[in-house]
Image 1 (cartoon, rainbow, N blue to C red):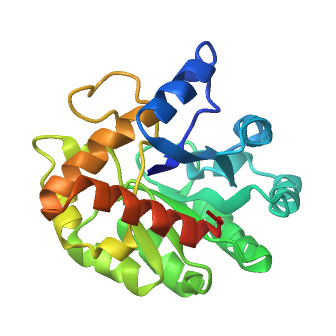
Image 2: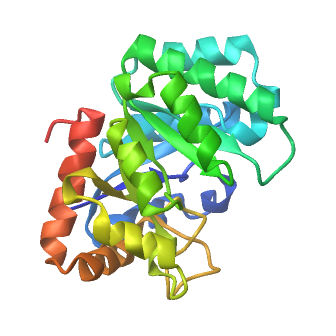
Length: 256
């Protein structure tokens, strides 16, 4: 029924009750989830999870905040894992100008290398963007990322920026912020993006939707996000759940 396209069930916040969290998601109607690995430890955990649960899939990549730590052997390892039948995307990758751990030029280099990798293995990419929208779009254009397409994860830009991403073969994914009372931009984007290019996600354990804002997020809460978007788009909730799930399965090449 629901497809949470971006979860971090592989992080320490879920170490004590991971099984219960997964069961609550299923009870809430979440039939499929992607677990996103973004460094050595979380990629290893993501792969362990997808081996254990048939309805979980993995994305493997290197987070821009930690770009300075990535070695060539990490890139080779990600490329090797890309051949696993349950790895459905490369990422999350991108640019993050909020934290200053990794210099911008190193972030861009690691970003470009991962786009090239995704092209080699023919998988879509998942884009992390924080306070770097223009540079992210420019890199995607320069590297012809439209060739593989992918997801603008937890999109926080304008309708105009969303349209630029749609033109490059990307889906727009919305998470918890679309439910925040003061979140003008995500609500505008939710209304304007065509239903066939829209995805939903939690980015759990981060960005819990209203009324759980500030608490640990979990996949079951993707239902709150779907309900809010259905209301904004003035469409039936079941239809929105169905269409966004179909979009995710088409993008990730998952058979029903």
